[in-house]
Image (cartoon, rainbow, N blue to C red; front, side, top):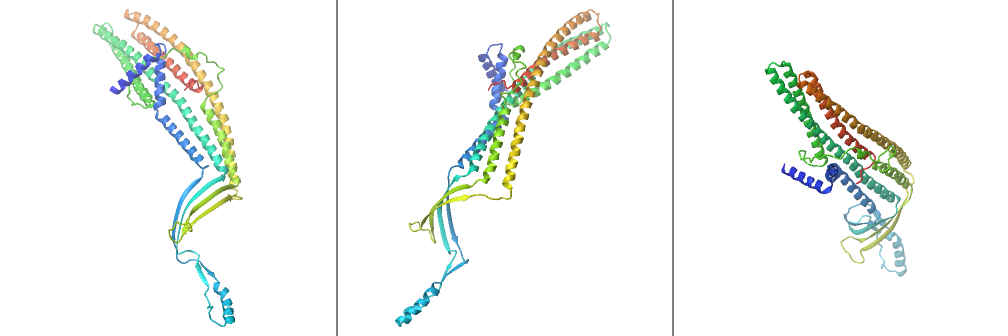
Length: 454
Protein backbone atom coordinates (compact mmCIF):
# COMPACT_ATOMS: atom_id res chain seq x y z
CA UNK A 1 0.00 0.00 0.00
CA UNK A 2 2.93 2.31 0.76
CA UNK A 3 4.24 1.68 -2.75
CA UNK A 4 0.89 2.64 -4.27
CA UNK A 5 0.74 5.89 -2.23
CA UNK A 6 4.30 6.74 -3.24
CA UNK A 7 3.44 6.27 -6.92
CA UNK A 8 0.35 8.41 -6.44
CA UNK A 9 2.47 11.22 -4.96
CA UNK A 10 4.90 11.00 -7.89
CA UNK A 11 2.05 11.21 -10.40
CA UNK A 12 0.50 14.14 -8.54
CA UNK A 13 3.81 16.03 -8.53
CA UNK A 14 4.15 15.29 -12.25
CA UNK A 15 0.68 16.72 -12.74
CA UNK A 16 1.48 19.90 -10.77
CA UNK A 17 4.64 20.67 -12.68
CA UNK A 18 3.37 19.67 -16.14
CA UNK A 19 0.37 21.93 -16.75
CA UNK A 20 -2.29 24.33 -15.57
CA UNK A 21 -5.42 23.46 -13.68
CA UNK A 22 -7.50 23.55 -16.87
CA UNK A 23 -5.45 20.81 -18.50
CA UNK A 24 -4.48 19.00 -15.32
CA UNK A 25 -6.66 15.95 -15.90
CA UNK A 26 -5.43 15.64 -19.46
CA UNK A 27 -1.79 15.85 -18.37
CA UNK A 28 -2.35 13.15 -15.77
CA UNK A 29 -4.00 10.90 -18.32
CA UNK A 30 -1.11 11.51 -20.72
CA UNK A 31 1.27 10.46 -17.96
CA UNK A 32 -0.68 7.24 -17.47
CA UNK A 33 -0.59 6.63 -21.22
CA UNK A 34 3.18 7.11 -21.17
CA UNK A 35 3.52 4.57 -18.36
CA UNK A 36 1.37 2.12 -20.27
CA UNK A 37 3.43 2.49 -23.44
CA UNK A 38 6.56 1.77 -21.40
CA UNK A 39 5.34 -1.11 -19.25
CA UNK A 40 2.51 -2.94 -21.00
CA UNK A 41 3.37 -6.64 -21.24
CA UNK A 42 1.71 -7.27 -24.60
CA UNK A 43 3.58 -4.30 -26.09
CA UNK A 44 6.84 -5.69 -24.72
CA UNK A 45 6.07 -8.94 -26.52
CA UNK A 46 5.57 -7.00 -29.75
CA UNK A 47 8.96 -5.37 -29.25
CA UNK A 48 10.58 -8.76 -28.68
CA UNK A 49 9.00 -10.01 -31.91
CA UNK A 50 10.51 -7.03 -33.68
CA UNK A 51 13.93 -7.84 -32.23
CA UNK A 52 13.49 -11.39 -33.50
CA UNK A 53 12.78 -10.06 -37.02
CA UNK A 54 15.98 -8.00 -36.83
CA UNK A 55 17.98 -11.11 -36.02
CA UNK A 56 16.32 -13.02 -38.87
CA UNK A 57 17.33 -10.19 -41.20
CA UNK A 58 20.92 -10.39 -39.95
CA UNK A 59 20.82 -14.13 -40.58
CA UNK A 60 19.64 -13.55 -44.16
CA UNK A 61 22.39 -10.99 -44.75
CA UNK A 62 24.95 -13.50 -43.49
CA UNK A 63 24.13 -15.80 -46.40
CA UNK A 64 25.93 -13.38 -48.75
CA UNK A 65 29.24 -13.93 -46.96
CA UNK A 66 31.51 -16.94 -47.43
CA UNK A 67 31.29 -19.84 -45.02
CA UNK A 68 34.50 -21.37 -43.65
CA UNK A 69 34.51 -24.76 -41.99
CA UNK A 70 37.16 -27.03 -40.50
CA UNK A 71 36.84 -30.74 -41.31
CA UNK A 72 38.81 -33.68 -39.99
CA UNK A 73 38.42 -37.32 -41.00
CA UNK A 74 40.31 -40.46 -39.99
CA UNK A 75 39.30 -43.75 -41.67
CA UNK A 76 40.10 -47.41 -41.06
CA UNK A 77 39.05 -49.78 -43.91
CA UNK A 78 39.19 -53.47 -44.67
CA UNK A 79 38.21 -55.18 -47.91
CA UNK A 80 36.32 -53.40 -50.59
CA UNK A 81 37.11 -53.08 -54.27
CA UNK A 82 40.52 -54.27 -55.56
CA UNK A 83 42.30 -52.69 -58.52
CA UNK A 84 44.70 -55.01 -60.41
CA UNK A 85 47.61 -53.38 -62.26
CA UNK A 86 48.90 -55.90 -64.94
CA UNK A 87 52.54 -55.04 -64.58
CA UNK A 88 53.56 -58.75 -64.85
CA UNK A 89 51.55 -59.33 -67.99
CA UNK A 90 53.22 -56.31 -69.56
CA UNK A 91 56.85 -56.91 -68.57
CA UNK A 92 57.26 -60.71 -68.35
CA UNK A 93 57.30 -61.19 -72.17
CA UNK A 94 59.95 -58.50 -72.41
CA UNK A 95 62.00 -60.15 -69.68
CA UNK A 96 61.79 -63.53 -71.41
CA UNK A 97 63.09 -61.99 -74.64
CA UNK A 98 65.97 -60.32 -72.81
CA UNK A 99 66.91 -63.60 -71.08
CA UNK A 100 66.92 -65.37 -74.46
CA UNK A 101 69.02 -62.70 -76.12
CA UNK A 102 71.54 -62.54 -73.31
CA UNK A 103 71.54 -66.28 -72.64
CA UNK A 104 71.08 -65.58 -68.94
CA UNK A 105 68.34 -65.73 -66.31
CA UNK A 106 68.97 -62.26 -64.97
CA UNK A 107 65.40 -61.08 -65.63
CA UNK A 108 62.92 -62.93 -63.43
CA UNK A 109 59.16 -62.97 -63.94
CA UNK A 110 57.16 -60.61 -61.74
CA UNK A 111 53.55 -60.80 -60.54
CA UNK A 112 50.74 -58.39 -61.29
CA UNK A 113 50.21 -55.71 -58.62
CA UNK A 114 46.95 -55.52 -56.61
CA UNK A 115 45.76 -52.21 -55.06
CA UNK A 116 42.87 -51.85 -52.58
CA UNK A 117 40.54 -48.97 -53.52
CA UNK A 118 40.14 -48.13 -49.82
CA UNK A 119 43.29 -47.46 -47.92
CA UNK A 120 43.61 -49.48 -44.70
CA UNK A 121 44.23 -46.21 -42.85
CA UNK A 122 43.71 -42.66 -44.06
CA UNK A 123 43.34 -39.19 -42.62
CA UNK A 124 42.13 -35.93 -44.16
CA UNK A 125 42.30 -32.59 -42.39
CA UNK A 126 41.18 -29.51 -44.30
CA UNK A 127 39.61 -26.04 -44.34
CA UNK A 128 36.67 -25.58 -46.70
CA UNK A 129 35.60 -22.16 -47.98
CA UNK A 130 32.25 -21.82 -49.80
CA UNK A 131 31.21 -18.54 -51.44
CA UNK A 132 27.87 -18.11 -53.28
CA UNK A 133 28.56 -16.24 -56.52
CA UNK A 134 25.21 -16.28 -58.30
CA UNK A 135 22.33 -17.28 -56.03
CA UNK A 136 19.10 -15.28 -56.64
CA UNK A 137 17.24 -16.99 -53.82
CA UNK A 138 19.57 -15.44 -51.24
CA UNK A 139 18.86 -11.92 -52.53
CA UNK A 140 15.08 -12.30 -52.46
CA UNK A 141 15.23 -14.01 -49.08
CA UNK A 142 16.99 -10.95 -47.67
CA UNK A 143 14.36 -8.63 -49.15
CA UNK A 144 11.59 -10.74 -47.61
CA UNK A 145 13.28 -10.56 -44.21
CA UNK A 146 13.52 -6.77 -44.56
CA UNK A 147 9.78 -6.58 -45.21
CA UNK A 148 9.10 -8.84 -42.23
CA UNK A 149 11.21 -6.54 -40.07
CA UNK A 150 9.13 -3.56 -41.19
CA UNK A 151 5.95 -5.51 -40.50
CA UNK A 152 7.16 -6.20 -36.98
CA UNK A 153 7.77 -2.49 -36.42
CA UNK A 154 4.35 -1.61 -37.84
CA UNK A 155 2.72 -4.18 -35.53
CA UNK A 156 4.21 -2.28 -32.61
CA UNK A 157 2.64 0.93 -33.91
CA UNK A 158 -0.76 -0.73 -34.38
CA UNK A 159 -0.80 -2.08 -30.85
CA UNK A 160 0.48 1.18 -29.38
CA UNK A 161 -2.40 3.10 -30.92
CA UNK A 162 -4.93 0.54 -29.68
CA UNK A 163 -3.29 0.57 -26.25
CA UNK A 164 -3.67 4.33 -25.95
CA UNK A 165 -7.40 4.00 -26.62
CA UNK A 166 -7.66 1.08 -24.18
CA UNK A 167 -5.91 3.01 -21.39
CA UNK A 168 -8.07 6.08 -21.88
CA UNK A 169 -11.24 4.00 -22.02
CA UNK A 170 -10.31 2.15 -18.83
CA UNK A 171 -9.50 5.42 -17.06
CA UNK A 172 -12.79 7.01 -18.09
CA UNK A 173 -14.72 3.92 -17.00
CA UNK A 174 -13.00 4.15 -13.63
CA UNK A 175 -13.89 7.84 -13.29
CA UNK A 176 -17.43 7.07 -14.41
CA UNK A 177 -17.91 4.46 -11.70
CA UNK A 178 -16.54 6.84 -9.05
CA UNK A 179 -18.94 9.59 -10.11
CA UNK A 180 -21.87 7.17 -10.08
CA UNK A 181 -20.88 6.12 -6.54
CA UNK A 182 -20.81 9.78 -5.46
CA UNK A 183 -24.30 10.33 -6.84
CA UNK A 184 -25.57 7.22 -5.04
CA UNK A 185 -23.87 8.27 -1.80
CA UNK A 186 -25.77 11.55 -1.85
CA UNK A 187 -28.98 9.71 -2.70
CA UNK A 188 -28.49 7.26 0.18
CA UNK A 189 -28.01 10.14 2.63
CA UNK A 190 -31.29 11.60 1.40
CA UNK A 191 -33.05 8.24 1.66
CA UNK A 192 -31.70 7.61 5.16
CA UNK A 193 -33.04 10.96 6.24
CA UNK A 194 -36.37 10.10 4.62
CA UNK A 195 -36.51 6.81 6.54
CA UNK A 196 -35.72 8.63 9.80
CA UNK A 197 -38.43 11.22 9.19
CA UNK A 198 -41.04 8.60 8.27
CA UNK A 199 -40.21 6.52 11.34
CA UNK A 200 -40.66 9.61 13.50
CA UNK A 201 -43.95 10.47 11.81
CA UNK A 202 -45.21 6.89 12.14
CA UNK A 203 -44.32 6.90 15.84
CA UNK A 204 -46.57 9.93 16.27
CA UNK A 205 -49.35 8.34 14.19
CA UNK A 206 -48.97 10.98 11.52
CA UNK A 207 -48.34 8.48 8.67
CA UNK A 208 -48.96 4.80 8.26
CA UNK A 209 -46.20 2.18 8.45
CA UNK A 210 -46.27 1.55 4.71
CA UNK A 211 -44.35 4.85 4.38
CA UNK A 212 -41.52 3.30 6.42
CA UNK A 213 -41.45 0.09 4.39
CA UNK A 214 -41.44 1.96 1.10
CA UNK A 215 -38.63 4.24 2.28
CA UNK A 216 -36.58 1.29 3.51
CA UNK A 217 -37.14 -0.53 0.19
CA UNK A 218 -35.87 2.47 -1.75
CA UNK A 219 -32.85 2.68 0.57
CA UNK A 220 -32.06 -1.01 0.04
CA UNK A 221 -32.39 -0.54 -3.71
CA UNK A 222 -29.93 2.37 -3.60
CA UNK A 223 -27.52 0.27 -1.48
CA UNK A 224 -27.68 -2.46 -4.12
CA UNK A 225 -26.94 0.07 -6.86
CA UNK A 226 -24.01 1.37 -4.84
CA UNK A 227 -22.60 -2.14 -4.39
CA UNK A 228 -22.90 -2.74 -8.13
CA UNK A 229 -21.14 0.56 -8.88
CA UNK A 230 -18.36 -0.32 -6.42
CA UNK A 231 -17.86 -3.66 -8.14
CA UNK A 232 -17.60 -1.95 -11.53
CA UNK A 233 -15.11 0.53 -10.07
CA UNK A 234 -12.87 -2.27 -8.76
CA UNK A 235 -13.08 -4.12 -12.08
CA UNK A 236 -12.23 -0.97 -14.03
CA UNK A 237 -9.31 -0.25 -11.69
CA UNK A 238 -7.94 -3.79 -12.05
CA UNK A 239 -8.14 -3.63 -15.84
CA UNK A 240 -6.54 -0.18 -15.90
CA UNK A 241 -3.64 -1.35 -13.72
CA UNK A 242 -3.28 -4.47 -15.85
CA UNK A 243 -2.82 -2.33 -18.96
CA UNK A 244 -0.08 -0.40 -17.13
CA UNK A 245 1.48 -3.64 -15.80
CA UNK A 246 0.92 -2.63 -12.19
CA UNK A 247 -0.55 -4.52 -9.21
CA UNK A 248 -4.31 -4.82 -9.58
CA UNK A 249 -4.97 -2.91 -6.35
CA UNK A 250 -2.50 -0.10 -7.10
CA UNK A 251 -3.92 3.33 -6.35
CA UNK A 252 -5.16 5.40 -9.29
CA UNK A 253 -4.87 9.16 -9.08
CA UNK A 254 -8.17 10.78 -10.04
CA UNK A 255 -8.37 14.14 -11.78
CA UNK A 256 -11.07 15.65 -13.90
CA UNK A 257 -10.40 16.02 -17.61
CA UNK A 258 -11.14 19.18 -19.55
CA UNK A 259 -14.49 20.04 -21.06
CA UNK A 260 -16.05 18.46 -24.09
CA UNK A 261 -16.39 21.29 -26.60
CA UNK A 262 -12.67 21.63 -27.32
CA UNK A 263 -12.47 17.97 -28.28
CA UNK A 264 -14.62 18.64 -31.33
CA UNK A 265 -12.71 21.74 -32.43
CA UNK A 266 -11.11 21.34 -35.82
CA UNK A 267 -12.78 18.01 -36.61
CA UNK A 268 -15.34 17.85 -39.35
CA UNK A 269 -16.95 15.39 -41.69
CA UNK A 270 -14.30 15.99 -44.34
CA UNK A 271 -11.84 13.95 -42.27
CA UNK A 272 -13.22 10.61 -43.38
CA UNK A 273 -10.25 9.37 -45.41
CA UNK A 274 -7.75 7.28 -43.51
CA UNK A 275 -4.21 8.44 -44.21
CA UNK A 276 -2.11 7.74 -41.12
CA UNK A 277 -3.31 4.37 -39.86
CA UNK A 278 -0.58 1.80 -39.40
CA UNK A 279 -2.85 -0.94 -40.74
CA UNK A 280 -2.60 0.58 -44.23
CA UNK A 281 1.19 0.62 -44.03
CA UNK A 282 1.09 -3.00 -42.96
CA UNK A 283 -1.09 -4.26 -45.80
CA UNK A 284 0.84 -2.17 -48.33
CA UNK A 285 4.07 -3.72 -47.07
CA UNK A 286 2.46 -7.15 -47.27
CA UNK A 287 1.63 -6.54 -50.95
CA UNK A 288 5.28 -5.70 -51.66
CA UNK A 289 6.39 -8.75 -49.69
CA UNK A 290 4.03 -10.99 -51.67
CA UNK A 291 5.56 -9.67 -54.91
CA UNK A 292 9.06 -10.52 -53.70
CA UNK A 293 7.84 -13.93 -52.67
CA UNK A 294 6.71 -14.51 -56.27
CA UNK A 295 10.18 -13.50 -57.45
CA UNK A 296 11.73 -15.85 -54.90
CA UNK A 297 9.74 -18.76 -56.30
CA UNK A 298 10.68 -17.81 -59.87
CA UNK A 299 14.36 -17.74 -58.91
CA UNK A 300 14.23 -21.54 -58.66
CA UNK A 301 14.39 -21.55 -62.48
CA UNK A 302 17.74 -19.76 -62.55
CA UNK A 303 21.21 -21.35 -62.35
CA UNK A 304 23.27 -21.09 -59.18
CA UNK A 305 27.02 -20.67 -59.15
CA UNK A 306 29.15 -21.41 -56.11
CA UNK A 307 32.93 -21.19 -55.56
CA UNK A 308 34.56 -23.77 -53.28
CA UNK A 309 38.19 -23.78 -52.08
CA UNK A 310 39.68 -26.53 -49.93
CA UNK A 311 43.12 -26.66 -48.34
CA UNK A 312 44.34 -29.44 -46.10
CA UNK A 313 46.46 -32.54 -45.57
CA UNK A 314 45.95 -36.13 -46.60
CA UNK A 315 47.86 -39.33 -45.91
CA UNK A 316 47.93 -42.65 -44.11
CA UNK A 317 49.18 -40.95 -40.95
CA UNK A 318 49.07 -37.51 -39.42
CA UNK A 319 51.84 -35.68 -41.17
CA UNK A 320 51.66 -32.01 -42.05
CA UNK A 321 54.64 -31.49 -44.28
CA UNK A 322 54.83 -29.99 -47.74
CA UNK A 323 54.46 -33.41 -49.37
CA UNK A 324 51.14 -34.01 -47.54
CA UNK A 325 49.13 -30.81 -48.20
CA UNK A 326 46.76 -30.19 -51.07
CA UNK A 327 44.65 -27.37 -52.52
CA UNK A 328 41.38 -27.91 -54.40
CA UNK A 329 39.46 -25.06 -56.04
CA UNK A 330 36.09 -25.66 -57.70
CA UNK A 331 33.35 -23.70 -59.43
CA UNK A 332 30.04 -25.51 -58.96
CA UNK A 333 27.14 -24.76 -61.30
CA UNK A 334 23.70 -26.04 -60.37
CA UNK A 335 20.73 -25.53 -62.69
CA UNK A 336 17.49 -27.35 -61.84
CA UNK A 337 15.88 -28.36 -65.11
CA UNK A 338 12.90 -30.42 -63.97
CA UNK A 339 11.45 -31.05 -60.51
CA UNK A 340 8.10 -32.60 -61.28
CA UNK A 341 6.34 -29.24 -61.94
CA UNK A 342 6.80 -28.29 -58.29
CA UNK A 343 8.36 -24.93 -59.15
CA UNK A 344 5.47 -24.01 -61.48
CA UNK A 345 2.95 -24.79 -58.77
CA UNK A 346 4.96 -22.80 -56.22
CA UNK A 347 5.00 -19.75 -58.48
CA UNK A 348 1.24 -19.96 -59.06
CA UNK A 349 0.62 -20.27 -55.32
CA UNK A 350 2.77 -17.19 -54.70
CA UNK A 351 0.81 -15.21 -57.31
CA UNK A 352 -2.48 -16.23 -55.72
CA UNK A 353 -1.16 -15.13 -52.34
CA UNK A 354 -0.16 -11.77 -53.84
CA UNK A 355 -3.65 -11.29 -55.32
CA UNK A 356 -5.23 -12.13 -51.96
CA UNK A 357 -2.96 -9.60 -50.24
CA UNK A 358 -3.92 -6.86 -52.71
CA UNK A 359 -7.61 -7.56 -52.07
CA UNK A 360 -6.98 -7.51 -48.33
CA UNK A 361 -5.29 -4.11 -48.66
CA UNK A 362 -8.35 -2.71 -50.42
CA UNK A 363 -10.69 -4.27 -47.86
CA UNK A 364 -8.68 -2.85 -44.93
CA UNK A 365 -8.76 0.62 -46.45
CA UNK A 366 -12.53 0.52 -46.85
CA UNK A 367 -12.98 -0.93 -43.36
CA UNK A 368 -10.85 1.80 -41.79
CA UNK A 369 -12.80 4.47 -43.66
CA UNK A 370 -16.01 2.97 -42.33
CA UNK A 371 -14.52 2.82 -38.85
CA UNK A 372 -13.66 6.52 -38.83
CA UNK A 373 -17.11 7.45 -40.15
CA UNK A 374 -18.83 5.42 -37.44
CA UNK A 375 -16.49 6.79 -34.76
CA UNK A 376 -17.21 10.37 -35.81
CA UNK A 377 -20.98 9.95 -35.79
CA UNK A 378 -20.84 8.18 -32.43
CA UNK A 379 -18.73 11.02 -31.05
CA UNK A 380 -21.17 13.58 -32.43
CA UNK A 381 -24.12 11.69 -30.94
CA UNK A 382 -22.36 11.38 -27.58
CA UNK A 383 -21.74 15.14 -27.55
CA UNK A 384 -25.41 15.85 -28.19
CA UNK A 385 -26.35 13.31 -25.52
CA UNK A 386 -24.53 15.43 -22.92
CA UNK A 387 -26.66 18.46 -23.74
CA UNK A 388 -29.82 16.36 -23.54
CA UNK A 389 -28.75 14.78 -20.25
CA UNK A 390 -27.91 18.21 -18.79
CA UNK A 391 -31.34 19.54 -19.72
CA UNK A 392 -32.97 16.42 -18.25
CA UNK A 393 -31.07 16.85 -14.99
CA UNK A 394 -32.05 20.52 -14.66
CA UNK A 395 -35.70 19.61 -15.08
CA UNK A 396 -35.44 16.65 -12.70
CA UNK A 397 -33.77 18.77 -10.00
CA UNK A 398 -36.38 21.49 -10.26
CA UNK A 399 -39.19 18.88 -10.16
CA UNK A 400 -37.65 17.28 -7.07
CA UNK A 401 -37.22 20.66 -5.37
CA UNK A 402 -40.89 21.47 -5.87
CA UNK A 403 -42.04 17.98 -4.87
CA UNK A 404 -39.82 17.95 -1.77
CA UNK A 405 -41.31 21.26 -0.63
CA UNK A 406 -44.85 19.98 -1.15
CA UNK A 407 -44.00 16.67 0.55
CA UNK A 408 -42.54 18.43 3.61
CA UNK A 409 -45.79 20.37 3.93
CA UNK A 410 -47.87 17.22 3.57
CA UNK A 411 -49.25 18.21 0.20
CA UNK A 412 -47.60 15.40 -1.82
CA UNK A 413 -47.78 11.65 -1.25
CA UNK A 414 -44.65 9.56 -0.57
CA UNK A 415 -44.92 7.85 -3.93
CA UNK A 416 -44.65 11.17 -5.74
CA UNK A 417 -41.69 12.20 -3.60
CA UNK A 418 -39.84 8.90 -4.27
CA UNK A 419 -40.54 9.10 -7.99
CA UNK A 420 -39.16 12.65 -8.11
CA UNK A 421 -36.08 11.60 -6.16
CA UNK A 422 -35.58 8.53 -8.40
CA UNK A 423 -35.90 10.63 -11.54
CA UNK A 424 -33.31 13.10 -10.24
CA UNK A 425 -30.87 10.33 -9.30
CA UNK A 426 -31.30 8.64 -12.65
CA UNK A 427 -30.78 11.97 -14.41
CA UNK A 428 -27.57 12.61 -12.45
CA UNK A 429 -26.26 9.14 -13.25
CA UNK A 430 -27.30 9.55 -16.90
CA UNK A 431 -25.32 12.81 -17.15
CA UNK A 432 -22.25 11.14 -15.63
CA UNK A 433 -22.50 8.23 -18.05
CA UNK A 434 -23.12 10.52 -21.04
CA UNK A 435 -20.11 12.70 -20.22
CA UNK A 436 -17.67 9.84 -19.84
CA UNK A 437 -19.15 7.93 -22.75
CA UNK A 438 -18.27 11.01 -24.79
CA UNK A 439 -14.68 10.82 -23.60
CA UNK A 440 -14.61 7.12 -24.48
CA UNK A 441 -16.07 7.87 -27.92
CA UNK A 442 -13.42 10.51 -28.44
CA UNK A 443 -10.69 7.99 -27.55
CA UNK A 444 -12.11 5.66 -30.20
CA UNK A 445 -12.31 8.45 -32.76
CA UNK A 446 -8.76 9.49 -31.89
CA UNK A 447 -7.63 5.95 -32.66
CA UNK A 448 -9.72 5.65 -35.84
CA UNK A 449 -8.47 8.97 -37.25
CA UNK A 450 -4.87 8.41 -36.05
CA UNK A 451 -4.93 11.74 -34.20
CA UNK A 452 -2.71 10.70 -31.30
CA UNK A 453 0.90 11.58 -32.05
CA UNK A 454 3.59 9.41 -30.51
